[in-house]
Length: 341
Length: 277
Image (cartoon, rainbow over all chains, first blue to last red; front, top):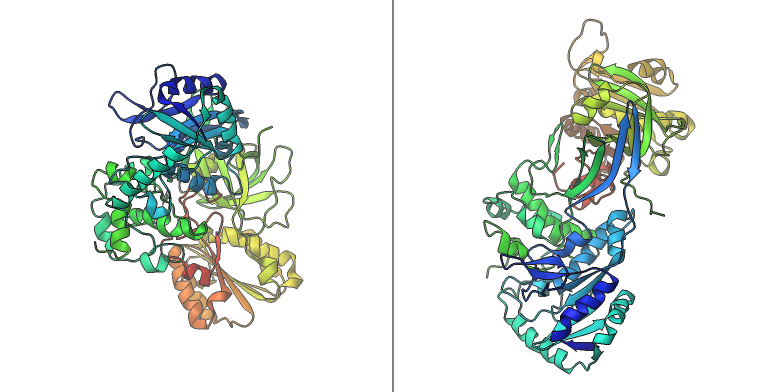
């Protein structure tokens, strides 16, 4: 483990930036944290987490996939993919680090999505341990330890210092870049911080939430549950939950005519939208109840069924704080899973 | 060197367009070099697109035994299909695939009597299997084909059915149309009723169905009444698709993605899925 004083944090960013771009949560003009490319003067936010998840780094909200030139009856396909360069995402919370594994299982299984893979390969994740988890946090439910975030490098920030530990080869490269600014450290302070945070975690309002009712093979048990109607009744179908969610990965592929050619791009889509499954001959999810059910069944039953029991949620709490009607996966789990408290 | 990307298609050229019915055309597609774009198995699908219009999934109606080209029977019903219906010979499109699980023609169907039941454009995916079975005729027992459509003019591949299927030894074709028509002396009535009337035996038989959902629903009831077990019946589904490889997230029924775990399902597999297709 290495450490440096917080006074040197800007120098750390500068040293990394010499080698590759570094992105970190910084407060925007509204005081909310957003991942920002570091430049001199950009300060690391003290916020617990960013408004949007860091999935953008590997699975951007929109990306061009290819271009077409058409002339008469002929078409030319232009591969617009370029070689990506290494970059660092600094300050990723444990929940979001786990979300990358969930996305990997979608995009990196055969056939590998080359757009995602090339970004993923070049991204170095510096994860930051939480010290002030909020009442919307429930990462523990999914077996995530907020005090021991994984990633290529794990980091712990105390009042005066920041500690780093490399977990992967990519992480070693990051450590090398900041070697001159850091010194060897023992784990005493980090361990003390972890213990303190764990005490807070245990007292969180959602600390007792568990997944035992859910998992693969539960489709017939939950699909026709009467509570879906009540739970989805107020859902506006706005899709906010899917956009802020670090694990939602549904996408659309669309064409845009630039006047000089056609760009085929991919963009985030949402199972909450009415046209998501609409076909020429009809729609197999006609009501918001069906669309709402799809989102939660996917995270709690379908995804684990296809992925060795791993759930499609990391308990980051973004949907809890952002849903305009205050509906969320926790309420669904409690109602459908049969917990009454 | 960039890694291979399934979402980036190949160029295809339309080399023949056949008007089958007032709203269905069959397109023959090859690469610009005049070759088949890729190999496939019966029941598999391909993504076709026209840049600027969109991309959509279509079943490959030609048999894999045809090594020269692929055919797609396409009903005019949306943006992409309308555009395709205006396309002329020589028009380039894009093509990618093959996608989905095929019918288990060698693994399961071989050695069985076959019953094919199709309605309307639902014949398109079955034609691939039917012609595969006809090509390897000695591997299959008796073949019965029940095919129905709204009218005589709406029967797909009519010439091939009359000239080839009906003249094959051991192949029985049972055509039906929904309503009486002047120049039609064949059967009149809906497919599910006709299947019941024909009173097929179930011995060593596999039934393969494709058609509008309402036809599938009632035909399944009829087949069950005739004594068919769920493991003897196969069908093929279609839902909205974008990627074709189980990642874009929209064609799932429960935990199964129609594009990669389907489109072919055996009835007992289908019955295990939630009713959302």
